[in-house]
Length: 300
Image (cartoon, rainbow, N blue to C red; front, side, top):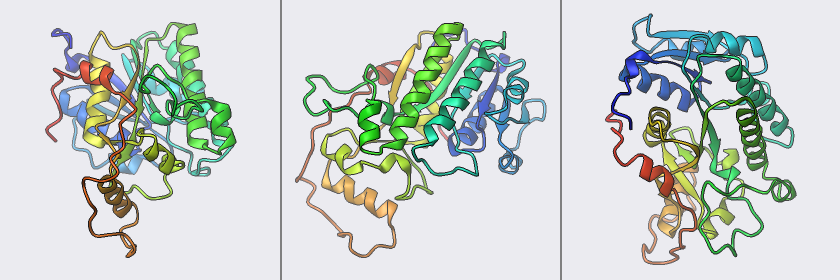
């Protein structure tokens, strides 16, 4: 990270700040000294009122990702944007139509960034599901990493709606960023481990195949937040970064995750043999690990 970087001189926008990642980013950025424009949809203002912060450091905006002008208002005066998509309240589930919604939102946000002269960098939150879903994933000589893209036709064939949405929206963002000369970096995150994670999370469709192929990766919230801030502050960051700090590749890991997802189910075993069914990891986050080697990690 460049030693001259001074967070207190930066104003950044977090969109959508009402999601778990967005809310945690707002807290961490304020703690580091940033001025933050917290952009939320209509339902998200209440969650931010509990943050103790200087009113001059935290400003809350109502921004609909489908309302271009509301995005412009939130970005005004900002040098950076942290963007993560939160499904609209009236369409919370990932299905075959979600890709259209998410692509439209990504297009609006990147176009607004291109029209905001003060924006220097965009950190775009995508997913590992925009990387891993390929017909040839089992026969590849190299591990999957941020150089790879999921095959949309493959995702459509197996109804992997999360993979389709994340792949198409990220590609839309990259196309606009390159065309409009917006400096963008994307973070392709593994499954976010959180207290409210359920079996219905759209990332989990195809979980058995991910596990068998050695590409079922997860990420803790603190690590994910740090990764976002690191790629923003480091002037050398570029392109895509696969972000995870754990892989589910043993029976023990799988059972622990199953207990987390279905805590009230009695059929799950209480213990497993730690030495059996180890699956070779076939996915790499070396690029991000190298970037974050000297980053000041969160102590929160």
